[in-house]
Image (cartoon, each protein chain N blue to C red):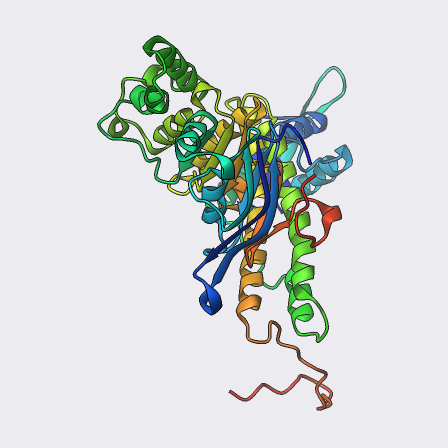
Length: 239
Length: 197
């Protein structure tokens, strides 16, 4: 187990329902993501990919198991601490961008920091930095409707990384994009991970999963690592 | 054969000698299919025999320039205008392997799929890395090279998708595999009789 993992999930299980009707969505998942590492999660529809991502980002509390982000145990955090940790450390990227249409690109990107009460000047500078990192330094004043799908997704990535947030959780980020634009978005995510972030990418698309350092499959609520030849069919063991 | 037509199409841009033609081919395909000079000269000889190119000037180093003929230009046009026909009868080794494995009692087809998928995904990652590490994609040579890499990426992806699909289909199958034991019927000589509908 690595001390500097940005995300650590240990024995995470998620059940829906109780007794005989209980459905196990995730069973004893162990997963670690290090700085500079991108892990792709694949698997059939309903295999628990999105549940895994929600739990990894602290949006959902698992039935059992431990989630640690940047050294903080989510199970012992109070609700307001959890929200603060999410805003400080975790950035989500969704298939449909989830930008607020009445805010400019800059306002969308800086919203999480504004909510944290960070000073205006710091927020502006962080926003400019984040937009610059995704190649949109000159589109800060544009509204989402004025941007192409690929640009909107890059704004969403800028929002996910603002203020040095280190954990990027992307749920089918290329799902609504054509293949060339999708590739640009993947390049942007890969670039941020290479710069030290850690990422989980949920995707159906093997071509985009190939941007990851590790590719794991979810099947029957368990993780199977498909990217290491030596681990055969073993359930993933954190390194 | 695309090497023959590719070389001819390059000659349509202007006369070239053998080494030069090889370099031009490499520039356009990112050295993905390296050709040796022997192949180039063999091809040029056959093109000359078929009246599609002819020998032209010789430079001071003794290199013979080959020029395209009118018949050669027609052939280039025809090649560019017509779709590439993929042979449908080719036996895909992997498809045959999985089809056979799926019908053998006691064989873990899922394990066969996993080991193949690991290999296919590793290849896909390598291709992606090669492309990601590539230089400025806006240059014409870089673009030509990345088009060839893209074609390999999409082919690898298709294989992984097909493996995912096969895994899912088999997992939904009530017995997880078809398990054909050896038939007690002994086939007669000649073509097997058609199955009854």
